[in-house]
Length: 211
Ligand code: C5P
Image (cartoon, rainbow, N blue to C red; front, side, top):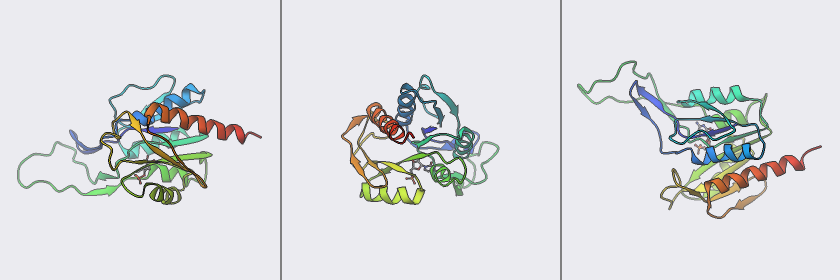
């Protein structure tokens, strides 16, 4: 199971909160896993790139819908949570388009469910390997190690977005793979190559562990 893209959190029927995630890294991971023979469910927020070939795609809009679609796709051997999920949604979204009369509206926000942490901490049907992502601008590896523990996942793929124009939406990614006891610094690579290496590394893990 792979999540990808942004989420859209509605304000009213025509407006929403979102972010700049293109879905390119998550879609590349889903495609690479399928190319290696995995049965893949890709849960994608709104993106402008095509569905990858050979993958079952569940299209969702909001974080709440994304969590439900992920849970419906379990059990799975591996969960890879690449989506840039909106941290907050609007409390009490308006059922009609908000009018531009009077004072500017104030949006009350409520926290969205953390899909990665929810799945990583499941008592039943937790995937054997749960992988999260972390975009940081400083102390990248230290924050990633802390995030790995806090979220309860097995690996964190951390990227330094401090000097990057365009990691979100760009072609390349420079990542550090943080596991329970190792940190691997990967070179700057196309997102498709990050995806290929990541799924190859996961396949190796499952091969080594085969009884
Ligand atoms: O806490 P932060 O947003 O930095 O964590 C990033 C990781 O958590 C990513 O793997 C992202 O897909 C996941 N996440 C999630 N649900 C959220 C927020 C983040 O699955 N609501």
